[in-house]
Length: 165
Length: 128
Image (tube, rainbow over all chains, first blue to last red; front, side):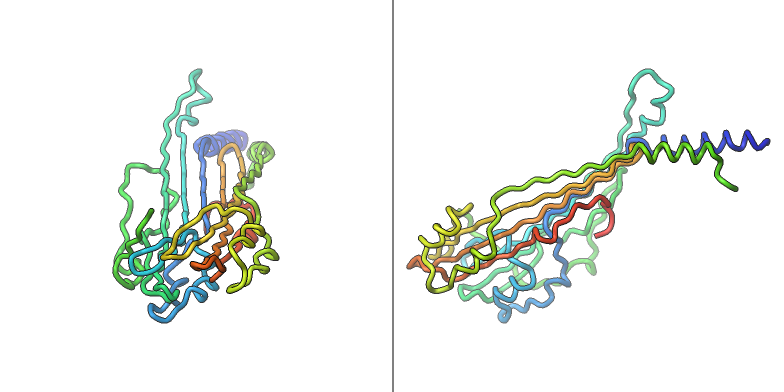
């Protein structure tokens, strides 16, 4: 193979590589900062007060009344979206505008709830959904991986029931 | 093997065609820290809170108390449009203020946090 042919092959290989990536989108949306079990390990039911929780986690997103006290909720979101359009591969060689799109969205919505007694002392705390951060993964035909027991935060009390309205 | 001029030229053209986008959205008015500091537990009244902060965004009944909630959302989005590959990152954070009033209409507690101070335009969607 001559030197010129190597150049031409390299050019087409680079062009094909770029074309195969055409139409790729990676999007991430975050709402507030995600709270991890390590971030809330300082909370001791029966001892920790609202002031101490607010000092470390900030103000909650909502406060609601419950039968036994007050529930403060911290909401956070880590949405990941990725999309690949394989139709771009044949666009240079066809008069139509073909699309073959693979995309996947991982919502990653979770909330951390703290139940206080009327004197603002923590009774219970817990995460709402125990979600693992979703990966960027445009392939839509695969089942999401579930949480394994060691990835879940420690159980700290019964489920929190709020009264709304 | 050295990359040829054609390959480098092609990559240079691709890189030159890149674009950036900045977007921002806000919801609600900013509550000044100085105003929050003037609210005193045990002395400030409901009327004074309303005079200082205006009507609350939400009013919550809480076991005999009233809770005034004020919030503000700030969103910053950065997009890197590389034609062959697009990255977008949208970060949203909120400032929340809760003023808890007792049955007599006196401030019992004030809970506030300002998360939007550290909000930045980001493009890279991976990592933290």
